[in-house]
Image (cartoon, rainbow, N blue to C red):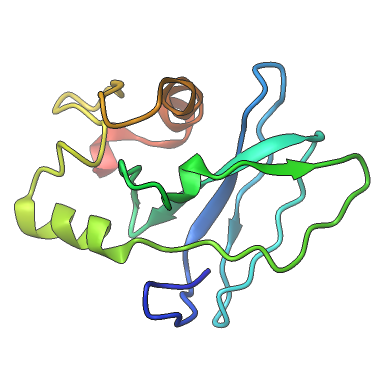
Length: 139
């Protein structure tokens, strides 16, 4: 995990975003001081990545957003050296704007909604996992 300046980013929660509708979700991992993490994915599939930091998950419309990646994993395969870009400015803009309505698809009542800036397949998959893993009272 690196930022736009190429520096390692620690303490980011990373979860594989499976692209197949019949693929289950695997446990998340947290980046270490060198930005490394290890996911144990339960099924071969294509995956993007959901990042959480400071209790928030953000998906942006940017092409290099980790949720838009498509990394194929075959049975028994180990993938090393995948660099994921942490778009810290997206989280920072949530803090300064106070809403983040164009970046984070949560509504005021704590429910998850799809927006035009999030690809439909990513949005539906995100809704499933985030509705289970995020407590609205903590946002």
